[in-house]
Amino acid sequence: MFEEMILEKVRKEAERIAEEQGLEIFDVQYRRESRGWVLRIIIDNPVGYVSVRDCELFSREIERFLDREDLIEHSYTLEVSSPGLDRPLRGPKDYVRFTGKLAKIVTKDGKTFIGRIESFVDGTITISDEKRKYEINIDDVKRANLEVEF
View 1 (tube, one colour):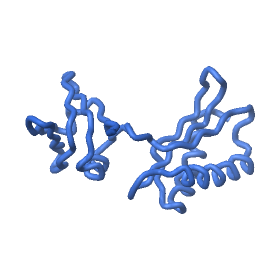
View 2 (tube, rainbow, N blue to C red):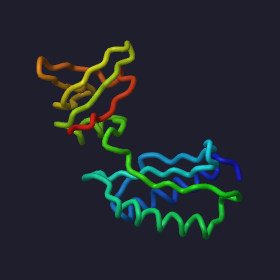
View 3 (cartoon, rainbow, N blue to C red):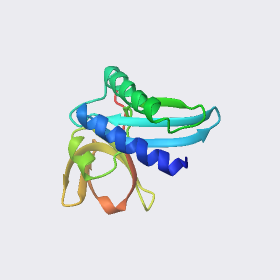
């Protein structure tokens, strides 16, 4: 079966399982890597953080589906994980959800901002560092992620 078809079927079932478990699908990847084929499913918890138990329960359910449907004809590794502490920020919902958290934003013109997300209103992200506040239009963001705090 073609990789795109596998990915589509896995994503659909992953979204169903995630919804049942109060989770969301952050990403689904199926690709050949140096150690062979990898099916990577990244789950998210919209009201908190993903626990090891969340990954375990999700993994069991998706494994049942994969075994039953037998979509992948060759050997592969299944990985279920969270987006991580330094997760990418991928849209308005993330900026609202992570208000108060430390983030790094790189704009399309190459500027880098590191600060706390203060707000997201009408397409504008407001972040602040110790010195000042910055307002960044979401359309100007090249990439953004949370920064790990110690």
